[in-house]
Image (cartoon, rainbow, N blue to C red; front, side, top):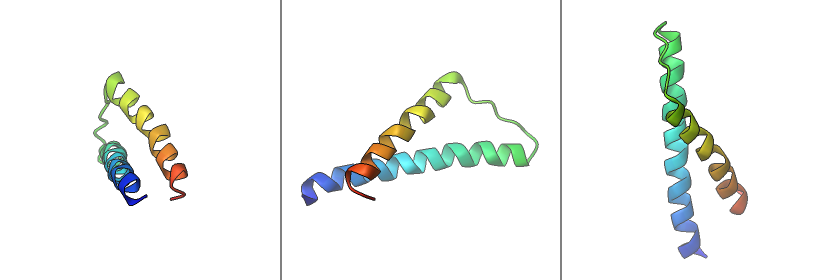
Amino acid sequence: MLNELQPDVRKLLDLMRKMENFDATLGASRAAGMLIEPGPAAFDERKRMEPLSKHLREKWSI
């Protein structure tokens, strides 16, 4: 079980870090009054990460 859990936890941590960085960057730019507009590809990537992270959390009851 640990052999299955380890890669999923690594992937989940990586996804969460990327999502937090994306959200924090947008939030900081808005707070500073310098609106950063990510491209459509960046928004698509962010949207793709959300269901995958949710799936991994539910898979392992995290």
